[in-house]
Image (cartoon, rainbow, N blue to C red; front, side, top):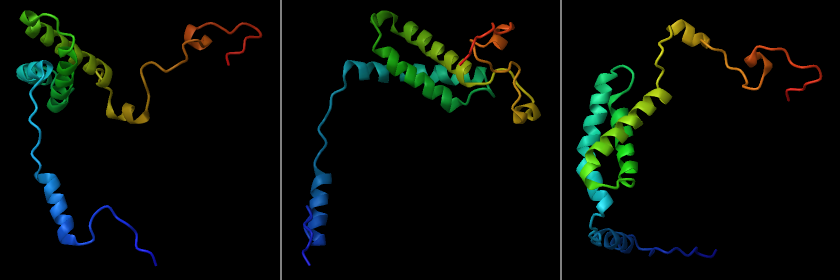
Length: 146
């Protein structure tokens, strides 16, 4: 039987020493980039905007979700920042817009009774856009919709 070669030493005490040497190496100090500094500076703005949005639309959006969406909007908007003097107004408008888009796209704004929701009925039945039923007119003779 041939012993399999392994990159770690066979002796457990040597393996432990090797692992400890790897974890003891000091992390290289990293200076913040200008983008990271702006994100950290305006992070309280994103948190406050997300928190106030969740209070304004209580029951529709969770506080943690609103803050997460606000922080994501902040990180993407900082790269589009052109003027430092108007940064706060630009970022507030961008974060609020992202929260509104999130509310529009992911939250059911029209409340449906639980019974109707469980049935799966919708107010407007889904149809293909190109279908004749969607346009309320009969198909022409010889027309194949597929």
